[in-house]
Amino acid sequence: MSLKYTTLKSFSFAFDGLKAALKNEPNFRIHIVLAILVVILGLIFKFTFLELAILALTIGFVLILELINTTLEAVVNLVSPEIQDQAKIAKDVSAAAVLVSAILSVIVASFLFIPKII
Image (cartoon, rainbow, N blue to C red; front, side):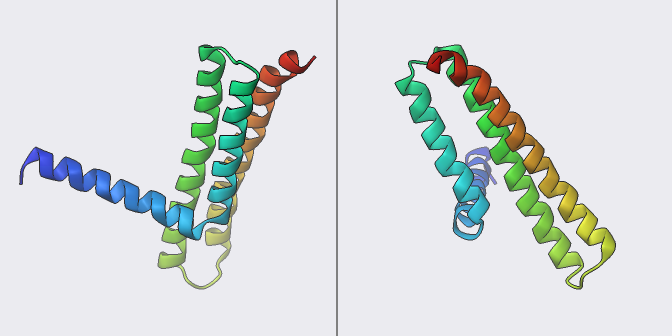
């Protein structure tokens, strides 16, 4: 199998994963919509390249954790379809990671937007 083939297949699988997340995960769609709005606002407020990069990194961090959370939930559901305390803890902690990253993202965005508004 050639490197080109395996690389193209890898990208194909990755895009399939993004499509699945967009189709099946309402929270991922909400994060995407909010990310687009925040970037548009950043452009309207004439953010510098560095400020936009900081926004992009924090947005990316939230989206990545949302994808990891979705993955973990799917694996836990596959391995443990019945409700178990340990499965619940794993899913709750994974969701908490997304929450913490979203809160951090709002804090970072506040640091960037408030000086532009005041």
